Amino acid sequence: MNQSPWQPISPEKPARPVRTPLNRERIVDAAMRVLLDQGYEAVSMRKVAQALDTGPASLYAHVANKRELDQLMVDRAAEGIVVPAADPAKWQEQLKDGMRSMLKVMRAYPGVARAAIGQVPLGERAMASTEAMLAILKAGRVPDQAAAWAIDMLSLYVTAVAFEESVQGASGWTLEDVEGFIAGLRTYFEGLPVDRFPLTVALAGALVAGSGGDERFEFGLEVIVGGLAAMVPADQ
Amino acid sequence: MNQSPWQPISPEKPARPVRTPLNRERIVDAAMRVLLDQGYEAVSMRKVAQALDTGPASLYAHVANKRELDQLMVDRAAEGIVVPAADPAKWQEQLKDGMRSMLKVMRAYPGVARAAIGQVPLGERAMASTEAMLAILKAGRVPDQAAAWAIDMLSLYVTAVAFEESVQGASGWTLEDVEGFIAGLRTYFEGLPVDRFPLTVALAGALVAGSGGDERFEFGLEVIVGGLAAMVPADQ
DNA sequence: ACCTGAACACCGTTCAAGT
DNA sequence: ACCTGAACACCGTTCAAGT
Image 1 (cartoon, rainbow over the protein chains, first blue to last red):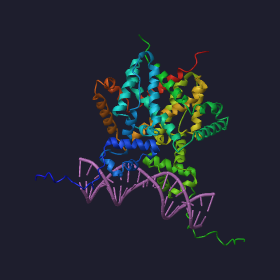
Image 2 (image 1 turned 90 degrees about the horizontal axis):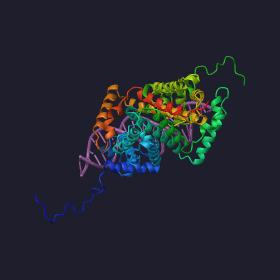
Image 3 (image 1 turned 90 degrees about the vertical axis):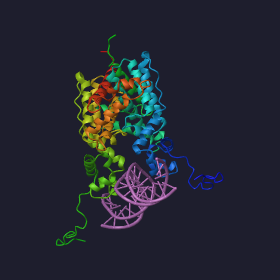
Image 4 (image 1 turned 120 degrees about the vertical axis):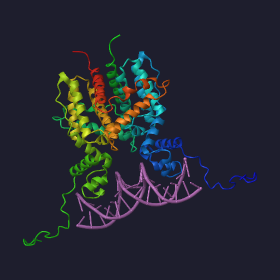
């Protein structure tokens, strides 16, 4: 039963590949790499497996299914979200800053919004920003139930905006293509029958304004924060 | 060159099938049927073609691609949206009613929100409700640019809510499953380390409240309409 | 316990060939 | 002009078999 000291342990049989074993972390790493390189549409179990030099079946020992991998990716991205420490004097601007940070992160991982849109983010990193946003809402004296539902609404809004952008961003549209699309949209609105669509025709310019930059998003922040501020009781 | 009157036109050769020819309308009809019967995930070019007793390639003579079919389905569903005629005295409630109607329609076609989420609805029926919503915003004296961007934000919010619901609704969850999920969620929040997540733990009940019904959606309506109301200039 | 090849049941889209 | 069969290049997931 004793092994001779001269008997090396499996001496010249590195037939079993020496590759580091798979785990969730390495799988998510690979998935994020595919996301950054080729966009969300390309993040398939097969492509991720390929990036790890194995077959798709191997992933299922560590990840329940594609949906779970999506969740893990969202939580990985959530790491980058920065929410300021609550200060009652400027809670409204802080809330906006938190949302701006969320959008920034989603833009940094184009298409991650697609993975995030239908799911409640429950990972540890996502929970940390939820907690920080709750603190800001409490600092602003937003009632508890409103604060809780606001959390949901905020991330729904930011995710939806990022999702919309990623749809435009996909299929390799250049900035020129987007400008052309917007110009076409405006022409479409302006060309509608004036008797049935008087306001759409009149506001064609306003309807397509700010499609490129952050103005639309900032408008949404203003609406949401303004609406929440209106829910703060007047007493004290 | 003249045909004899006794020479019947292709008399007993109905070898060429007599089926009514394909067109966009029939294709969208079939797609909506598949959507209602089997949900959005099942709406593939192949399944729609099958419902029309043909192959997927046949659809491409009438529809550019799956994306366009999605758009046509969204516009078809938009037919059901009812927006009240603008009345300055109650524009806020009217705006909410319009959004409630949008959600109702999306719930009637489970999963159509999935087709709508990344696209600007430009079909004739969708434009009609855009025009009506603009009228309400104008009646409320919301500034033009705000009204135009609000249109976008409103439909983004409703679509995102419907999308979220459809994700839960898919995979055949029963009401009991959803309740179990919510109970589990609450337990998860309550079980987080109190030192790092004090607010999440304290507000666990509020965070999961109203997940089933319309309370969350109504909260969102209140926030958005309240935020828009705050943008109405005080003069006059 | 972990990994794998091969298969199953699907996708969207294209294209040459038919009528 | 419209339709079609067949193919191309993909999917997520399962499962028996390997180590």
